[in-house]
Length: 203
Image 1: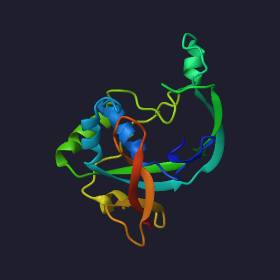
Image 2: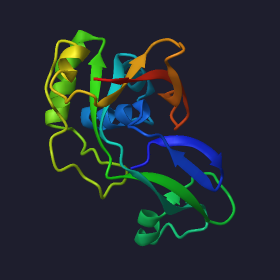
Image 3: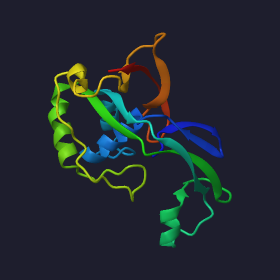
């Protein structure tokens, strides 16, 4: 998977080292049946009702995938539509660019719910998603239900992991310990993001 790092150039897109908040929000929207592009108020409400923490079970390794973007393709050709990034409103020929991916990474995501009324809805949607969520590409479907239980707090959610495991905790402010990660979705109907603050800790 690729977890949306900054575009270094039009030819290169890196990845963050962990699942991002924007990825998690998109994943939850799929489970809940919320259109990320069309139901912006619902997406914003969801975004502002959760904090996202990530436990790193295996960092994985980075590889590079070659992808295409542009408008020089035949929309009547089903293979063309499936194999290309459809860049609406763009111009010029299709272009090949490099996209960095994480391979063999293993992460647990802990969603801290700030609105108690949302918990039951999220649990139900993760156990029985309205729309099938996928990991990065539509061909990469889940093999297991993405739900590991409900815990009274972050400390209780972390208690059964082996000592020394790295996790990234979302915090609401900048500090000497916090790192700014550009992955907080602006929810304006596109993929634009701003920063959130996380700190790396060990269990």
